Image (cartoon, rainbow, N blue to C red; front, side, top):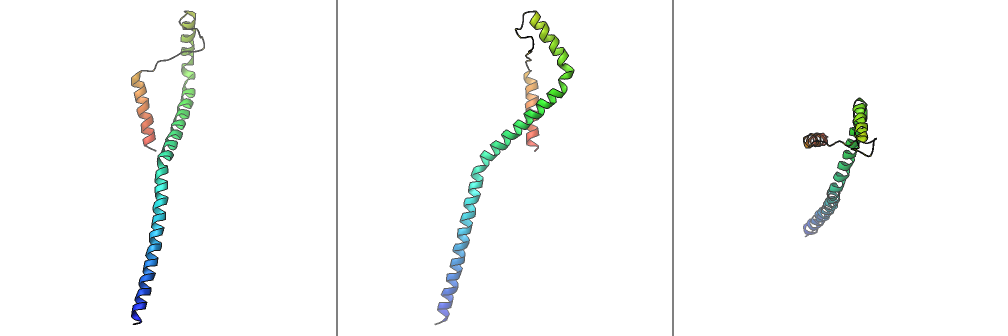
Length: 115
């Protein structure tokens, strides 16, 4: 009859180990679920940071290339002001064609997708 208590002890140990493993798996699932739930916010923040970086790079590129065009823009601004078409001599508004905006948007999206 001593075999029965040994078998029970072995089954009890196996049950205890299985419960411990189950509890560890449940904690890991909860941790993973929390990490999963946080992903949309992290992705949104990362995308926002990347868009900000794209804007900074585009502004730097504009500032680098603008000197080649500033004389032409200044001449147009002064001429518009003198003709009475504009109240501000130091400003010149440029309308960007839709096609150019679409190309720029596609290029920025591709840049984001490639990283």
